[in-house]
Amino acid sequence: MRRFLLRRVAAVPATLLGVSLMVFLATDVLPGDVARTVLGREASAESVAALRHELGLDQPVYLRYLHWLADFGTGSWGTSYTLHVPVRDLVLDRLGQSLMLASLAFALLVPVALTLGVLAGLGEDTPVDWVISGVSLALGATPEFVTGVVLLVAFSVELGWLPASAQTSPGDGPLVVLAHLALPATCLVLLCTGYVARHVRASTVLVVASPYVRAARLRGVRGARLVRRHVLRNATVPAASALGVQLQFLLGGLLVVELLFNYPGIGALLLASATAKDLPTLQATAMVLGVAYLAVVLLADIAYRLLDPRVRLDGEG
Amino acid sequence: MAVATRVSRRPSPVLAGSAAVVAAWVVCAAFWPDLVPYDPDLQAPADRFLPPGTDHWLGTDHYGRDVLSRLVAGARPVLVVAPLAALLSVAAGTALGLLAGAVRGWFDGLVMRLLDAVVVFPVIIAAVLFIALLGRSAPVLVLVIAAAFVPLVTRSVRAATLVEREKPYVEAARLRGEPLWSLVARELLPNVRGTVLVEATTRLGDAVFAAATLSFLGLGQPPGSPDWGSSVADNRLWVQLAPWTVLAPALAIGSLVVAVALLTDRLRRRLDRS
Image (cartoon, rainbow over all chains, first blue to last red; front, top):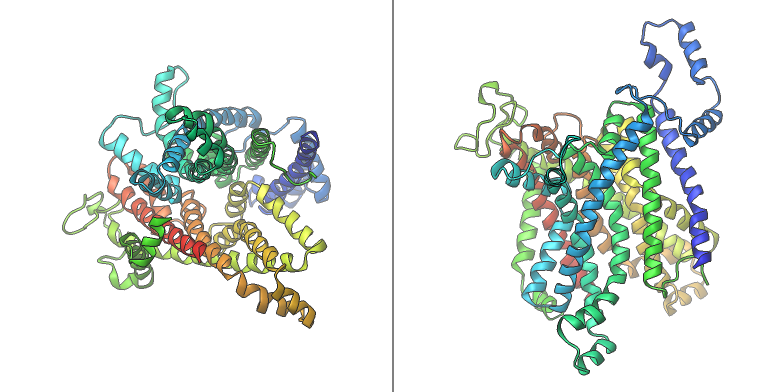
């Protein structure tokens, strides 16, 4: 376990360097001459050259990359071109907003997916299983903005039960915030439930057929106790890896859901800054998202390892 | 697996329905200029936000454009981008997976490490960065989606190849002195075709999903395109006033992805049994 942890943690800086290199190259090399863009077309060649020098653009690419990396590492992320506020405050605030939405979705996802998967697995090839499997297959295949639009029209436009925008004001109480987050969170849960539930179903089917469950049944263990003590624990291990895979989708889903429900999260910020070519914001947002993503993937791997000591990951005997 | 066996012997209504839905959208994508009642780009300011009725079966949008015509025309972008991206990723992934599995050694190690790096990468961030900065166009969209899927295809094909290469017919071919290209193309490829087929259909479903999502995020098609994802994004601002302009393209995407997913699921089960 220690060796595995060390290897995984040691790989993080290398991956981070890769992410930073991609972000830097995509934002620094592709958009053309920043100095010319800032000063406008009429600016004289001398003033452009002066600004290029001031911004360090006349230096070689690798020096610029190292400077940028050092600045980023020490927390000076610059000022947003479009919003004119310090990028660091902006990005960290938006990250907090997204984490709130994602945690709510995740907290709903785990019990829902486990319950549905175990129910379908216990009733293999019964109508319960057909309905759960069919619906989760269909929902897993449907893009989140499609389910989101249907939810939006049904619960906000037609019924008027829930607000269409997820944006809350600072003074709102927890219930109001929850009402605003209900639709986007449901949308994320619907996206991910199908995949996780199908994994849980498959492992439940295997566990139910296994000798120790048969033995427990023969000993007279049945009902809720059988499920809780014998089935659930062993059926959750594959679910943990499925949840890890879903984190990727959750990240993509955040972008979509935040855009659809006007939620001021980090995914919406990434899109807005990319569209506006607000480079300092775009760089910082992409980096922070990359770091968050890597951290979450690492945590999921470790959780999977802890749940099932038999799992041998790469790099272990 | 009693259900699956029963399904395979009788034509299932689910299967037939899914195939019909996909076929209908393919017909729309191919022949939309002959099928639409109005020009999908024709603006009629006097007819803005008409609810569904006899003149406009699915109503009109904020420019007075006919929603049904845009729906039919909008089948084309996604049905061009998604199959191309799926085909590209399956072709590249199959070639890489077969070679890595057949050659092993340093080549295998290099390919797998590179692909691990791509998989660890948050694809959606890369997609936003590249599409936003390179501009929105169909070729960029195809390349980005294909690049994201190549590692997944490569892994499955390599795993299948590793199983096949231990079998006697491969050893026999090696002993006959077959060159590598022949070993890969004539011996291994025909025997991993089931895996390739499953990958192709799975990636097609995923590519429809990805193309629709990226164009919803404003990264796929040029502005004003009748593409379904772009239409949902554009019309979302008027959802309170004219929900039909948003629901129609959203349900169109839903019907296509669910039909493709059901077809893929049936195909996979059939291949698993044989």
